[in-house]
Image (cartoon, rainbow, N blue to C red; front, side):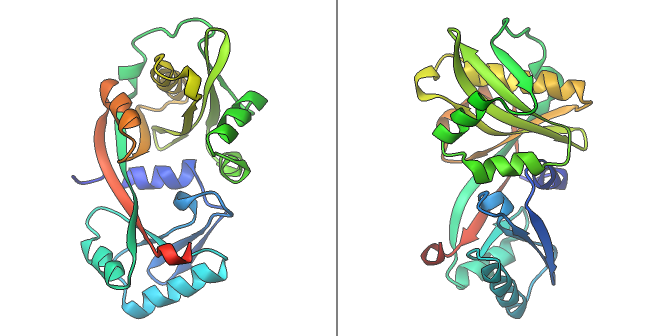
Length: 241
C-alpha cells in the first residue's frame, strides 16, 4: 500500500500540534497532552544515529517521551528505531472515499447536527470516552474549516465527533458513540453528517483514521464503502511513557 502524502498533511492541519519544531531532518511536535498525533516526530528523508539522538533530547526537553511516526516507505528508519529499543505503538488505517458516496441518503430529522462551537453535551460525550480537555484543545486550535458533530437516538444524546477540511479532504476525528447507544447505526449517520458538511465546504473526499485493533470501527468504515488508502504507526519507548 502506498499512502498519498496529502493524508499526512491533512492529519497535521485538522488535528494540529500546539507547536512544530524543525530539528535536522525531523519535524517535532509539541502536543501539550493531546495524544500521539500531536506529540510525535516525523522524518523527511533519512536520519543518522546522531540526528535521532538529538531529536530524542529535544522531545524530552519538551516534557515528552520520544515518539516517532513511521510512514510508508520508511522501513530503514523503522529498523533504526527498533535497534534503539523502540516498540511499535498504535498502527492505524487511513480510510477514505469520494464524499458523494455518503451523501446519497438523507439523514433522518433530528438524528445528527453539525455545529461550532461544540455543545456542552458533545464535550461530555468526549470526556466519557477519554477525549479530555487536552484533546479538545487540539480541536480548538485547528485553523481550518471545522465542525463538531452531535448524534441523537430515541431523543437522547448518542455520540459526538469532530471534522476538519484541508486540501479538499474532510477528515473525521474523535468519533465517540455512548456505550448504551451503540449498534443503532449512529456511527454511520454521523459519518454521513460529516460528508454533507464537508461537501458544503468544498471537500471531495471524506476520510478518517482508525487504529488497526478497533475491529468495530474498521468494520463500520468498510461497510460504508470506504477504502483503506494508507497506514502508519508509531515507535516509542514504553519505559519512558
